[in-house]
Length: 149
Image (cartoon, rainbow, N blue to C red; front, side, top):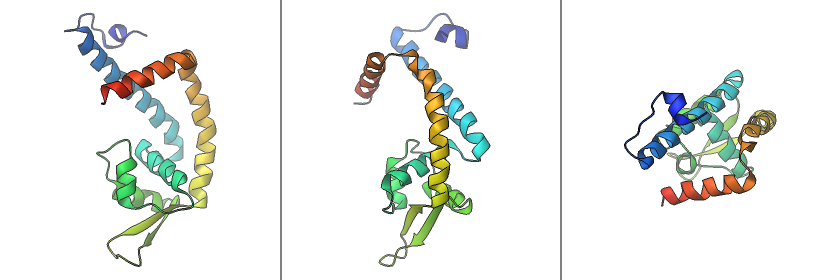
């Protein structure tokens, strides 16, 4: 559906202004899809992001700083998210021997299992994006990367 129809607005200051609104609107739309997908599992998109980072690190540990640096939502509190995931049994947090202020974070077997289950759901959800061809998706990626230079 066109942005104009979604937000009930037909005029924009400029095409660039419309583009910015379209990016923001689409980002929120994707976030809502992810939130709905994750809700039955009792995890937030930010917690899901932490789990994916830890799976990428597996079997090596990650520090809170590494997690914060790699998170997509830079405003999230990685320490708080780690603690919530630890309580759910999805991760393990071990105090560093060398520096008591630091801790090593590992994904648990339970965390790997939930990600495996979610992978199938995400693959199905991503079929929504196959409305774009491979080449179109590549162009969108290149344009978004160019905006962030």
